[in-house]
Length: 469
Image (cartoon, rainbow, N blue to C red; front, side, top):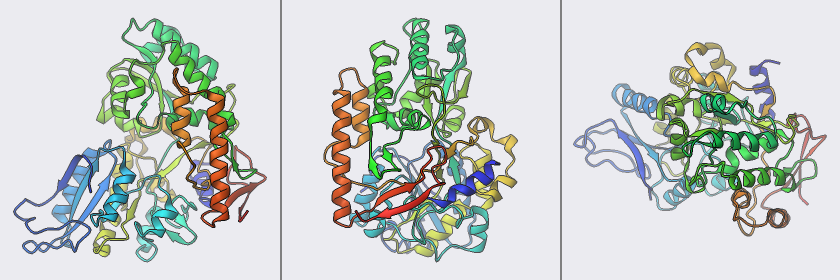
């Protein structure tokens, strides 16, 4: 089965904070009188329609800068893009706050959000009425609908322009050679490899690193568990079950206790962690295909690096690895410039734009159309992250609001040497998440998802049912 056919099969399921960058194409004089995306966006002097765009991505900044400037200079619709990259880790909170305060951007980059809540509250609006034949041809918009991820029923809220691969083990070839080790395939080997690299690191280089303040559990611990057949939601029985994560938490805690983790790692965000790897101070870490651009452009690696599959519990692959549709854009439900906002989305997901974006290594093609026209020899290190047959888009588990910590936070805290008891953490999560699920079902806020004949290696092959009890 080809990657293109595999991706098509997956379609069955489916107040501003700190700014690192803001780009407006016109001079300050020309912008006099312009208003934010929450208002009419018209300038009394230039008569341009301003479209305010937010993103949380910094790895593609060079390309986006070039293309936004190009659009602002050449578009014939008298539209001006104001493009802002938010540096805050509270991106979703900023979006909600901006919508509430009437300062929402006109469009914003897709993120993992509670789609139902965003849709119900009017933070976003469906794109169906805007989608043209040309747009659908390039993106295969109707083939890449994922229920609860980018669509609700027939309503499409964002269209993926690309695909991020699942996480890989990214490693420093020189440190591995110095330590006489090869990429680990099991949890036990991971602990040993980290220890050996630290031993030859002379107090400068360490086995591994975790961005403790930037979703460390999600980036690769959870993904190793997936490959081992472990997921937070039990799709076969329609409930949450975190029991299988125990050996993965124990392995990370052991690496901390061995001194194999770069000191200070637990209090780092992702970019400083990447910098430590790029400068040669870390043996390996786990992350997805965006690292191809990060390590070649944003933080060019000073060491030779390579990519390997993530280790699993026992070296066998027993479950699918999550890959993520990306490079899509929500349209604000509050915008007063919907037509202009759509023209910007069309531009960001046009054939020419996506071809350059993919060929410069920022994403993998998701549509067969784009896959056929991109020059893969230009993709650079992104080719190291080419999709594997065992990667898939999982059905979206019911979104609940449990009492206490979110599971990724709680499980990460249990990974730390001075963290809470692992068994108690798992027991509490099983209780709070299933109590929240039962409550939300009884209130009609969500439904219980059950996949009959569920196969973790083919999570979309079973029969999906949504139950009211």
